Length: 260
Image (cartoon, rainbow, N blue to C red; front, top):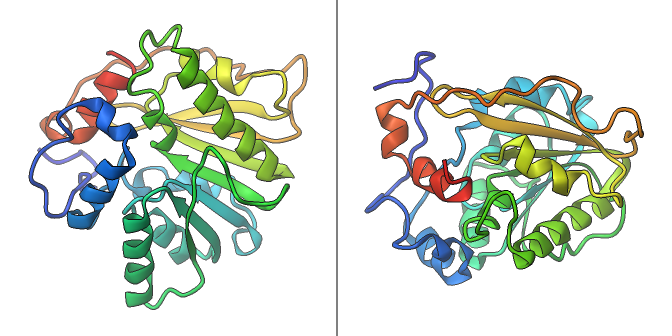
C-alpha cells in the first residue's frame, strides 16, 4: 500500500531477507561489510523528501554550510543535500566497503566535491569546531539494539552513546547544529542529550505516517538553565502501521531499539 503522499517507500536493492538473524549483528562491522557488498541502496527512517523541509530550516545559507554525515552507509542523503546546493559535505562510515561503494557511486554521477572517509563515529578524526552541521539518520539508534531496558540502558551502551555525542559536540562550530533523526523517543534520548557537559539547546519535530520518526535539533551554545530541552508538551504519537512499514526492516529494527 502506498503512502498517502505517494512518496516512494524505503527500498533496498538486491534484497534477500529482512534484517540479520539477530539484532546484535547490527553492531558487527563484518555484518555491514557483507551487507554492503550486495546491497546497493537502503534508506533507514524514510528518505530525504519526508524531512527536507526540516533540514532546510537549519542549513541557511545552504551554500556556506559545512556538513558531516555520520554513518552514511549506502544512503542517498548526501546526494540529496548536494542537489539542494550544499556542496561542503563529508561522509563517514565504519565499513570500508560502504565507503568504497559510495565513492564510486558519487563519481559515476559526476559528484566530486563530497568527501567520503572510513572513520568511527565514536572517535571522530577531525579537529575541534570543524563543521557547521553534523547529521545522523538512524546511526545512533544502532548503539541501542542490545541496550536492555530502554529506561535504564546498559552502561556500555551509555558509554558509546556519550562518546559519540562528545565527539559531535567537539567538532561542531560554536554555533553549530547537530541533527539526529531517530526512532528514539524524547524521554529516552533527553537524558543523554542533556548531559551537563553539553552546551546545546534541544528541540524536536516528528514526521512520518504509520511510524513517527523524531527529528532532533541540538544547537551548540544555546543552552540556558531556564530553557533546557523542549518546552512543548510531548504526546507519544499513536501508531497505525501501513503494510509496507510492517514489511520494512525499520519495523524490526525499531521493535528492538525501543521495545514497542
